[in-house]
Length: 222
Ligand code: TZP
Ligand code: MG
Image (cartoon, rainbow, N blue to C red; front, side, top):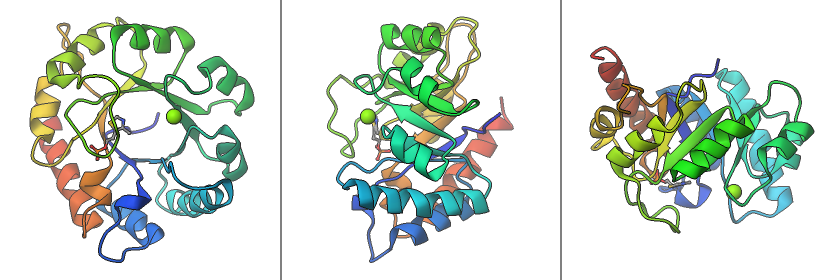
């Protein structure tokens, strides 16, 4: 079972201070990231493939699952562990039919209908968001908020699908996110997904470690 607790989504365009992609990713992995999703919107196929290959090598080294955003062909080419699909991407059942058995499939959800559909379709996990406002992605629906995340967790009923929240999460609101995002039945998030707090940091190792430490603190108190 994958550990979704600190799920890094990449964003090469956010890299600062002359950092190269592989260096930033390795530092984040050393800091304790538990899943990596390669999400690169402005690359052509050849560049995406190269970034995915570099990511695969590093994820293998640190024994962390690698997820590819959108591109099933790239996921297959680098033998990634799975794909992450948006609401207008390939349907889950089509992705499932193309990927090897046991592949992880995640779906972005921001309302109850999305959540119920993802459960029905047999997705492995959902990304709920945006929980807070963010400048990393141009949002096409209102922010969900922590209470909204709780409502979406309610919609999962007894499903064992995994859950991460995404959008505007940083070390300054992580505890509020983890504490606040709880369903009426007591169901909690399995993790949080972060782009800029790690990838835009001049020190991705420390940024990831800070988040990890907060997650450990929280887990020891619930
Ligand atoms: N999906 C919903 S919000 C978002 C994605 C990919 C971007 C989150 O980025 P950040 O920098 O962690 O706010
Ligand atoms: Mg997509």
